[in-house]
Length: 144
Image 1 (cartoon, one colour):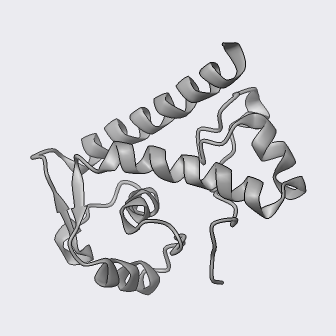
Image 2: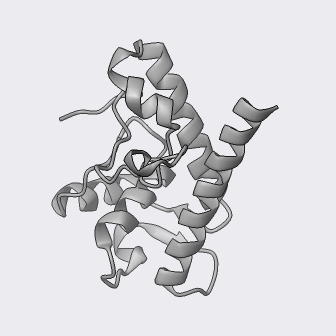
């Protein structure tokens, strides 16, 4: 299925059902998760644009995509779901999520790592920073 800027970012691991204001899976706000199917296409695109911007902020200093076509091909080959309407750098989140605790050779995916860091540590750092950005945005949006 071809995705677009209005496609759901849901990962199927929603934490808003446990009382989180920001989903630990997709990083949408609780009201965005609840009302997603009621949103217009421009509203969905606005949410996805915010999430894309946060992903780029977290990743751009850590990684580079050398070959987006290779990355897309490898993701498809491995059955990894990603939104090809977003910046290819954001696809790294989908790759890391799908890889779980498996070891990856990022070069095989057309990705260059800017830091000498273990992949597991990198994952932890970027997931934490992405969640922090989303929670800070939520707090700013609702509590200022």
